[in-house]
Image (cartoon, rainbow, N blue to C red):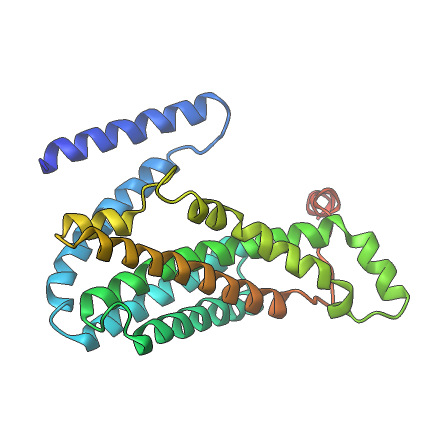
Length: 254
């Protein structure tokens, strides 16, 4: 691939998409352009780092640790920065990553070399981060929308955890919808990146397919763990979030 031509085409597409979004009132400003610029710089740094990282399993583990920290901070910022949120995001993402990668490594189904470990770990952490953020967002929305129902159950003697139990499950299931849909249509609607990457690297199509299956399974499993941990930590608040309209009115009055 010609690097300069690639950069020009990608920049042109993102610029056109940014202009279109702002034209229809999406108010994204320059966020897509900033995002793709950051992605380009980070990928350039990643290429240089990987040349060194692949020489040592310990360096791979360090790099996965860096990815884990960034994912936790990004998710906590997206959810709404606070110490409880940071702790919950850290517990959800770290627990998911450690258990899932540990099972795959211990089983030996993908090999224990640095390339496989970094690929599985990186893909998993990125997807679990998104699932964690969406789960928390949906949980807050459910608690806001069903505030009266929860308060009614509390008045009847239910504990905060019991009163919000239904909404914890709903939040996780809603957050996993894109992952489940993408998984169920793999090969028909979506062409998975891990599969294509393995083919480009010269793997046998069967091996590439099995590797992609491991990736998909790890995301579903890891997402389930992350969603469960997060909702258990944030899904029984002593103080319910205010409905959006009330929150906006109080912000104006303040």
